[in-house]
Length: 141
View 1 (cartoon, one colour):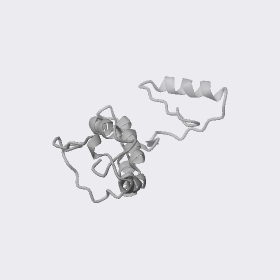
View 2 (cartoon, rainbow, N blue to C red; view 1 turned 180 degrees about the horizontal axis):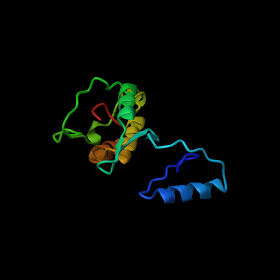
View 3 (cartoon, rainbow, N blue to C red; view 1 turned 120 degrees about the vertical axis):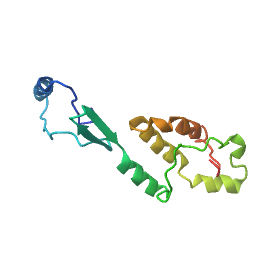
View 4 (tube, rainbow, N blue to C red; view 1 turned 180 degrees about the vertical axis):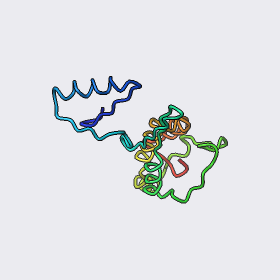
């Protein structure tokens, strides 16, 4: 449930009908049918394989464009294992601090966090690692 939208999932259609009838007792509802989108997550059903497929491709592509990363090429790992970032890379000079203040680092990490929690568990380590530098990121971060 989110604000005034909710989704019912079950293997029993009678249970769906019961939940709807109970909710109707208290508030007016509109049935929009089968779900296709939920909080920016595309939902597809594979009834033959008894699967629900979730994708944030549209959200990810929009986010890439927002942060100027639309020309990045796919890679097999979310972060190069040889990458070494530390607090030594934090901005030191006033000019570097001012320049980094214009970079939406926290917003970008938050965007990655939403993707990670929704559909991309494979980026958990990288998002956690990058979030350590959210307070004062440097150019290398």
